[in-house]
Amino acid sequence: MATLGGLFPSSVAASTAIRAPAPAAPTGASNRQPPHARCLPVLGRRAPAMAAVRVSGAAEPLLRPAAGGHPRLRVRTHAQGEGGAGRGASTEGDAAFSWAPIILPFFFPALGGLLFGYDIGATSGATISVQSPDLSGTDWFSLSSLQLGLVASSSLYGALGGSLLAYRIADFLGRRIELVTAAALYILGALVTGFAPNFVALIIGRVLYGIGIGLAMHGAPLYIAETSPSQIRGTLISLKELFIVLGILLGYSVGSLEIDNVGGWRYMFGFSAPLAAIMAIGMWTLPSSPRWLLLRAVQGKASMEDNKKKAIQALRTLRGRSTSEKVLTDDVEDTIVSIKAAYAGQEAEGNVWEVFEGASLKAFTIGGGLVLFQQITGQPSVLYYAASILQTAGFSAASDAAKVAILIGLFKLLMTGVAVFKVDDVGRRPLLIGGVGGIALSLFLLAAYYKILNGFPFVAVGALLLYVGAYQVSFGPISWLMVSEIFPLRTRGRGISLAVLTNFGSNALVTFAFSPLKEFLGPANIFFLFGVIAVLSLVFVILVVPETKGLSLEEIESKILK
Image (cartoon, rainbow, N blue to C red; front, side, top):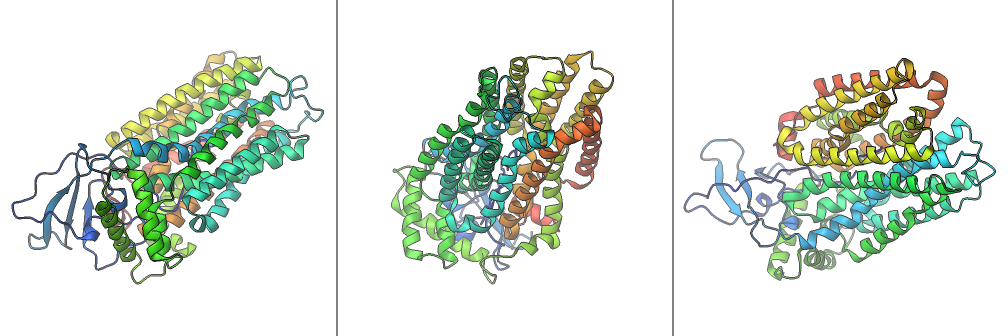
């Protein structure tokens, strides 16, 4: 999935903008809100008896920040209906947060995304090195197009398997242990690949690394969402996309340094092992997600008293030691109330078929369609084979192509930053429509270059830059942001899991098929085909994808999915 932008997860909260302070509550209004009004549950569906909640930002007790001087978060509750008698008092609560305790609980899970991106960038150069008679350093360098496609895509097949594995065991392991396991698989896969004595061992190492990708892309956004303050949860989840891009750039850079060395592909793949070790050590030192601990207790799969104590201790670590015991205890109790209300009258865990019914089916059509088009418009191929495309475009030396790929990675990083910080101002649909239109144009330019403009190498480079920029302000970050927003609370976890499977499956298929298809159809025809698919995806966005800017999760469910 080239970016997956990133890639994701059993209860990811939607991206929300930081709101201005609400007007003061009327004189005499209560400053104390009932527990369900102060907590918008992420898991499950709201019980019918609960009052409707309108939230400027996702307010959850466990993620309510410690005291400080940040703008307040407005939470307004009201009974069903809009009449004056049925409207509750407006209230305000302090919602300041401290950055210090936030950094590491974001950084170490985000390394999982960086290592996924690194694999994408490193593979771009490694596919050149491993099949070079002079640079491979092996006697099995003569790879067919099918074998080369397998080298590039086998980690994605592993990621598909990892996603299936996460679907079954992630809630049992917990977010923290899932990410520790992912880091261990990253290390093992990198070492097996780096020391591979033959082609089979190389593929086994790539698959092991890919399983780590699947677990990391499921667990990282969950852990970040469940441990970060509500005001910046959306920004942090989107910033994980930036870490994926940083990983791609790092992979390009290592590839550029090693591309002219004999056996350089071994170093390109093996370099990720020490980074994964940092991730493993870091995640081991972090606490478990407090929300996961309480969810397990409510589901009857752990002792309520023991997990309440663990949740309080985890919150103390995540918020800073200065937070009072009473505040931590109150938040834990309120969150237990919200989780019980979310599961009231329902089975503790739903079944997968719910995703294909009613509002959930509409959400899956939107979210699944976005992540599918994200891949079948050629994104994996353009990134994984960037260096090869540039060589064909006139950069004859492998090192020249790798250096230009670094420039493309820098541009990708810049455009990702633009999308992350403008999505809540401009909106989802405008960025998607403009970006997908740019993707279609760039693909047709690549087709034209290979057909009639092959005397102008700058056309290929310009088209690649246009493709990367357009992708990073549209499909890259926004597809996964929409996926995290669009599913109803009851089916969000399983719906996002299926979206992850759709993404990795189509990613692996496109990456694997690109090299044989390019050989069969020729580069001009294959990029023209991707261009036609991009036009279809543009029609899909215009006709099917809604605008969710400024809407709370409940408003999305009531206004868009009904």
